[in-house]
Image (cartoon, rainbow, N blue to C red):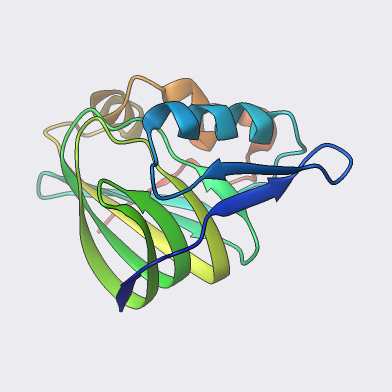
Length: 164
């Protein structure tokens, strides 16, 4: 189920100072501001699995409850399958997705999100690539922000590509 989220994404940083970083007037610039703050804090590993098959790259990220996160800037339109409870920036403002949802995602979008419960986010991207690193580079110019490219954040196995 999708519903309009009437609130805002707020974090307390530093020393419990309230900073409203995302509201109904979301822009990529605001998401970038949030990302700068997040990158100054300790990072956690988000379990990521990859599958390339039939011209589709599926990238699934498990996002634990209570996490504020940002995604990379997308260069191409794609689709997302979301299972859980998450508030995320969209081209129409903040939206809360609960349960199972399939949503469009547009090129030029950079998202911010907060999870209210454990959430799985799968991005489906058309590709002719056969290697994950090449598919990532086709999808975004911000590959250096992906945990699959940041070896000091990875658990063993996080970069493997699942095969059918």
